[in-house]
Image (cartoon, rainbow, N blue to C red; front, side, top):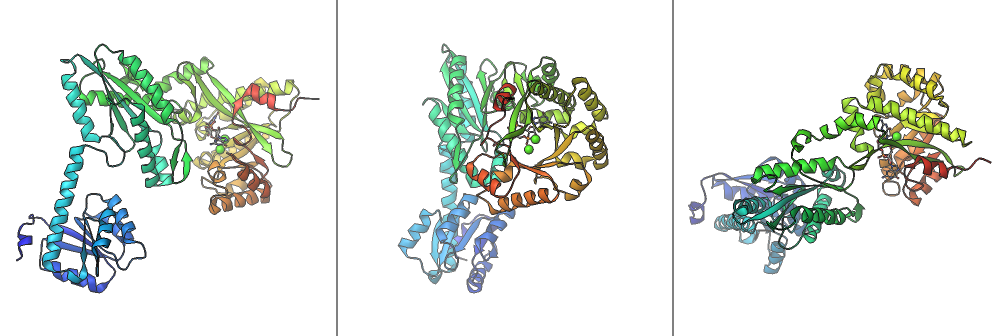
Length: 572
Ligand code: C2E
Ligand code: CA
Ligand code: CA
């Protein structure tokens, strides 16, 4: 037995060989067969390798560089990104020193030529590679630096916080722990991919680092979660300093992020907790900072929240708002905004969609995505829904009295509202009480609403249609897109979902979907409305493809009722 093998630890080591040449595979197999400590798994290319790496634990990667369509350095970079702590040894029939150096720069741990390969060299290289990786991992840990962003890592964060808290009181100091993360980052990753996600996290880390003074410590403690420890003398105005830092952070973090040559606006949420005021233990403080951050998540846009004693009681994301919604209805904190619908043939505003907003007395304007899903869960959408219909009706009446006519006013009706047995009767009562012009009213439904209980929904719609109300199918294309529904139900319009419109001129698939929806709608004599039109190019595409109406920021964002009224032509 050779000397190299005697020094190997007593555990099986899994080697993954990426090489499509049968001859090379057999050669390595025969070398390693003599050494039961090593087990060889073989595959033909690096795509297959990535799948294997996902499913099994591999200790070494041997990558053959001579027969792949991609440059070896690209493959090494890919594998390294996926498994930064697994040694990668590049193999080729003959590797010059210069080629070898390039491979090392690309993150290969070592390189070997097949022509000089023998048992001893291979075993020595494996042992050496293992040691190199072990040492570099240790160095990384010692440096406490994050692998992605130019900040400390999680371990560094805990050690620093522990160290500072231990000496906080004796030294008469105080500190703030601030945690920051991005809203809906998982969705972002799903949509744009992990490497775009990495770019954003890197940029986030840099922005945070640049916003804090040199003596503050920044670390990445989760995927997209960063922590800041601000350590101040006991006499400093801690709360004021924290507030001004939070303001600065919001300003720096709210601008859009560049990734793979495009730009995306990503909101962030920030939570802060003070020590010793709110606690002096690591776990308690990190928990309270997260609670404050969760509170901040309930507010639209980049926002922060500072821990308050008692926040535990309302820390469940939903509870805080839930109890306030009924009060909000009574206190008239809800308002309807209107987003114009423009006819593409005449270029004129023909209608609008009513969109609810919550003017919260302390939290500012809360957008529907931050409370409607919650209200759908807890049933509060039912009273809110009635409020919306009544309010939209009152506005319609006001327009009528001013002699202003619109063809359509869209009001969203949520799937949950159909669970209310009184839905049809209550709507009819509101219409009567407020003398609402039903021929203008168009309820916007989503396919999920209809699928929930098709027969019941059909009965409701038929009964409301008798009153003269019309219906549109909202977010069309994203749901089941069941065409049979369109035949069975009294639907007058399709609203093409924003996700397709926003990819016009970028994705031929999106273009094809939009074209098919338009032609489907026209075949069925339905009006088709494109939502979320933001650019001239999107508009041109829709005009050319004969779309009937558009809604979107290109023309106007949702505006207050008085602004909407001003946008409409004055009566003669
Ligand atoms: P939705 O029905 O799909 O409404 C369209 C949303 O897209 C609105 O967001 C609008 O502001 C936004 N939007 C319009 N044009 C553009 C554009 O060009 N670009 C971009 N990026 N966005 C655009 P909003 O007002 O935040 O409403 C969000 C959702 O909340 C609505 O989606 C709807 O599902 C729900 N919602 C709003 N008001 C009500 C309501 O009174 N009742 C019910 N049940 N749901 C409502
Ligand atoms: Ca809608
Ligand atoms: Ca929609």
